[in-house]
Length: 114
Image (cartoon, rainbow, N blue to C red; front, top):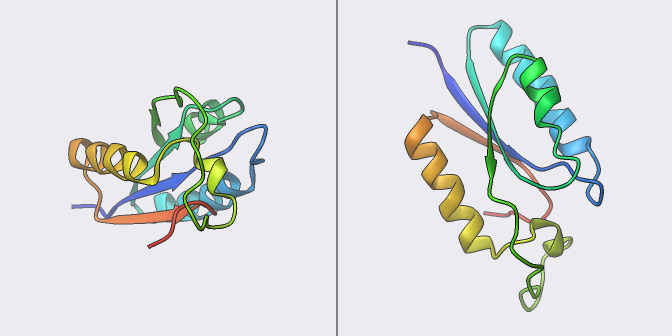
């Protein structure tokens, strides 16, 4: 049985591409060692799903935000980049993990903490 690793990272015209690109570098190396990889990203303008797929990784886009949310008080840095309440993002990510499975979850996102 191969190791299954999920990556939770977003790219967008507002956030940039660095989070997904860092994860792609790690995912490429892990896949070359036999790992199964899955990217979980929010459907935001500039999400890079086509690039992730072209590199041979599975992807799931979380639903686009219905509207901007008010930042929590006090907000973590860049909280607005998540575009949904953190509890909603956690629930949606957990549902993807339950459906697709993963032994590990790598998170690269300024708005997501422990």
